Each structure stands twice: as C-alpha cells, then as structure tokens.
Amino acid sequence: IIINSNHHQLKSSSTQIMASRRNQIPIDDDDNYSQSSQNSDTSSLDLEESTAVAALDPLLSAIDDLEGRIVSALDNFKLHPGVKSNPASDSIHAELRDALRPVLEIAAHIGPATARAQWRPAFRQSVDVAIQEVYSRLNSDIIIPILLESAQSDLIPAKRAAALGFFHNLHTEYKTAGSYLDYVEISQAQTQAATMTGSYTGSLYGVFDKNAHSPPSRQV
Picture 1 (cartoon, one colour):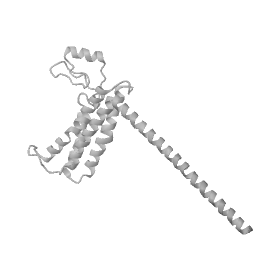
Picture 2: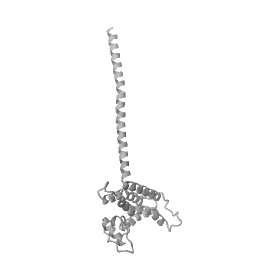
Picture 3: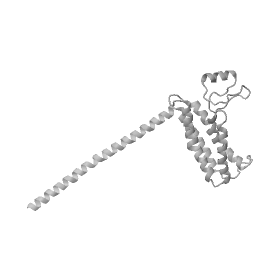
Picture 4: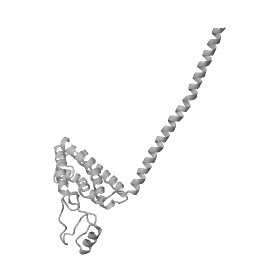
C-alpha cells in the first residue's frame, strides 16, 4: 500500500510539472512575439523616418537619381563586347569613350552642379558639405572603384584602355569651370552683379559667356 501511495504521489507530481511547463510555453512565445513585434515596429519607424527625410531633402532624391543613371551607364560599359558595334563610331576606342561619356558628365559637372542647386541649409551646414557628400556617394563609392577595377582586370584590352583613359579625362574635366577643382563660392550679391553686367550666365554652375567679360581666374 505504501509503495502504491508513493507511486501515485510521484505520478501526480510529474503530471503537475508537465502541466506547469505547458502553461509556461505560451508565455515565452508571447514574449518572443512581443519582442519581434517591437523590433519590426522600430524598423518600420526608421524606414518611414528616412523616407520622410528623403522626401524633404531634395539633394538625397537627386543623388539617388544620379546613382541610377551612373549604374545603368556602367552596366552598359561592362556588358560591351569590346568590338565596334556602332557604324557611326570611328573606332572601338571612340565607341567605348562615348559609352562612358554620361558617367564623365555626372562625375565632373552634373554632380557638383546638383549639389549647389539642391543644397538646403536645413539639412547641411554649408554647400561645401553638400558637394563633399555628392562626391563621396557618386565618385568615391561607385565610379572610381568600378572603373579602376575594369582598368586593372577586364579581359578585353580595349575596355581596359577606355577605363584607364577615363581617369585622364576626368582630371581634365575637374579643372574646367564649375567642376570640383574650379569651385569658388560666389555670394548672391556677386552673382547678381555679374549677371547684370552680362559676364555671368550660370549662378549655380560657373558658366561664363565667352563674349562677355573674362571670368575670374581658376583656383585649383
């Protein structure tokens, strides 16, 4: 009788332990679900906040658009077979140079011009900060690494030469009016005065009328 009583007590205790564990499982699942839900809500809030900032900051939207154009042009260059396919081109080298021309225009001219045009003091301390951001995201992060890799390891000699020649052309374009190595910040008063005298034709880009007065000397 004592043995049976002890067995009954052990069986009852075991049943209670199992029931207690079963009761604890939904609690743990609820905690995990709650934590996961909180993380998801936080991620959603961060995404919504970044989207709202991008919608308010015109420069971010402009940079995203330029990035897409750069990637598309570089993809076309990477996929080029390396043989002349356009009858209008003088040679394969001219054809590849033309393929990289949109990238060169954005890297040297459209990029800095966009920074000056879309800069807003509510988002950045100065126009110089905006120009540096555009240069970092477009030139430093995308254009230069990809074309440097092509110049070093592309299997097609003509494409290696085109990628290498891009850097020579880029440095030349950097020194032209309105690009990175020619940038001189002009106050609004100076811009208006130059416009009235007919010597300044692009307040945000640094383009001067060839038939007007001589432009300011470059500062490299």
